[in-house]
Length: 312
Ligand code: HSE
Image (cartoon, rainbow, N blue to C red; front, top):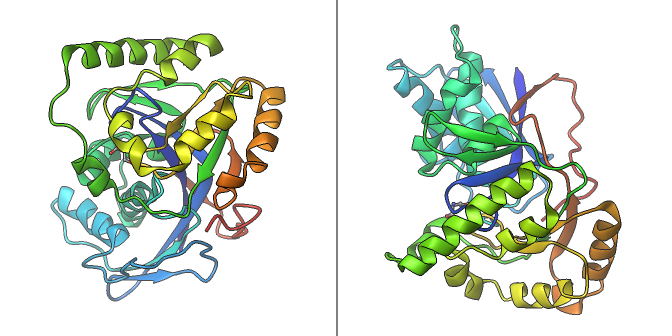
C-alpha cells in the first residue's frame, strides 16, 4: 500500500488568473493498493462534507486521473483500490479537484513498474484540469507562475508573510464561476493587469510588502465579475481597513478569501480582529503556511491527523 498527501492550493492570487498558484500546508491523503478491479473508497478519517462526491470509478476524478495516466502511456490500467481521506473542503477554491487529479497520476505512477519523474506528470495534470495554477503547485509545492506546460517560474514565499483563509460555508463551482467571466477585456484592463502581475512577481521575489499590497489590488480579469458572488468580501475588506494586512484576494474561483499579512505581529492582530467580526462568524477563519514540498509520499505509519480540527 502506498500513501501520499497532496497540498491544498490557492490559485490566481490577485492578478495571476490561470497563472499564479501556491501550495498550502493542509492536505488530502490518498492511498493505493493492488486489487482485482478499480474501486474508490472514502476513509473514515475524512473530515469534510462529501455530498455529491461520486465514488463510481467512471465518475470519480481520482479514478479518472488514475486511468488517464495509463492512457497517456498507451497502456492498460493496473487495477487498484484507491482510498480518499479528505481534509480540503470541496468547491471552496482551495484545489480539492486538483488534489484528486494530482493524486490519481502520482498513485498510478507508484503502481507502474517504470515510474516517471514528478515533473513529467505536469503536462498531463494540466491537460486533465484545463488550467495549471492549482495542479502545478499541488505537484511541485511553493509558489508557481505557470507559463506553459513546459515552463514555470518557481518563487519562494517570504517566510515572514502570513496567510489567513476565510472559508465560507457556500460552495462555488469552478465551471460556473468561469462562465460568468467576460469574453473580452479593454486595453486599459489588460494593461492594468499586466502591470499588477509584474509587480506581484517582483514583490514576492524581493519581499516588498508595499509593492505587494498594490499588486493585490490590480486584478481586472476575474475578481470584478466574481466579487459579487462572495458577500463576505466587502465585509472582509472593511474589517481589514483597520489592520496592517497587505490585502485580500479570492482564492481560486472562490468562495474562500485569502488575506496576506507582512509580519507575525500584523498576522496576529489581523487574525484576532477577523475572529471578532460578526458578519464573518459563519466562516472558518484559519491561519495557514505555504507548503514547499508539493505531493509527498508518506510512510505508511503516518498519523491521519493533518489539521487541529475539521474545516467542514
Ligand atoms: N484559475 C482558475 C479559475 C482556478 O479561477 O477559474 C480555479 O480554482
